[in-house]
Amino acid sequence: MIRAITGATTVAAVIGAPVRHSLSPALHNAAFDAAGVDWVYVAFDVPHGEAVRALDAMRALGLGGLSVTMPHKEHVAHAVDELDPAAAALRSVNTVSRTADGSLRGSSTDGAGFVSSLTEAGVTVAGRRVAVLGAGGAARAVIDALARAGAADVAVVNRSVERAEEAAALAGPIGRVALVDAVADADLVVNATSVGMGADPAAGELPVDPAMLRAGQVVADLVYHPLETGLLAAARAAGATCVDGLGMLVHQAALQQHLWLGQLPDTEVMRSAALRELTSRSR
Ligand code: NAP
Image (cartoon, rainbow, N blue to C red):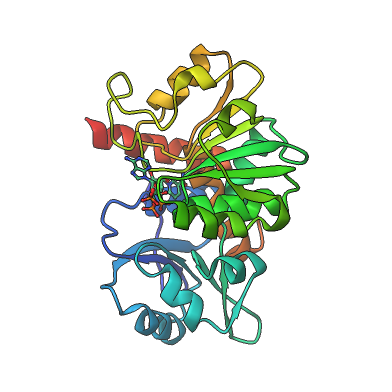
């Protein structure tokens, strides 16, 4: 059933370029429907360099909330009135919300969303030795959140060492740059590279030698297309516990709704909507 949009409906949106293939409208609208709130979520393709004007528009149009994706995350971090601790550390914003006094507050829910996806899978972070593969935007959010959640050691493995150093520094004293051997010793292995994205899991390149994976480890892949990546298939075969990338996508969106509405949405509804969308696109 299509919801009636009236003059009282609150509009939320994602800004990015390109944004046409974003799953966010499907996730957020499904959760708004399930919660029975009078909100609607749309996507705006905002060209590079126009993020600050989009924030002005958010104020002028009274948008209830904004999701921010590439290439605007850093620009928005400089333009909002205040930042949450994760966004300040990362100098990157994926969520803008309005405070009671009308200020715009920038948050980063990606890392916390990742930790929530682990919690949902029954995996605790506190005290764990973690190997993070990758040092891009997603890896940085994950590294920051792992340190906040009490990881014992965060080893960052990346092709470009300079980026690895910058990313590892986000974890403070427990962060370090490491070689790929760190995977064998880790309790939790996180693929935050784009290796495996859009690849046939049977034929695709793996971000790590599967011989390093073992039972007792948790292996999480941030890649969610395909959902069962080559890495997760290899980890499953080795007896490791697997966490797919859709959990992070869903939980970062759920935390956005918590910031906008003050209530957490039904994450199962969001996950089903994302799966439906991914399935329809792969037909
Ligand atoms: P990014 O900033 O472009 O970073 C890409 C990372 O992958 C870099 O560390 C890069 O290494 C590494 N990389 C790329 N190709 C590689 C290769 N062939 N071999 C080894 N390393 C390689 O991208 P991002 O935004 O961090 O996203 C990374 C992945 O996470 C993407 O697949 C994205 O879809 C996924 N993601 C998922 C979620 C979610 O909610 N599940 C959220 C955000 C992102 P260098 O630094 O050496 O170039």
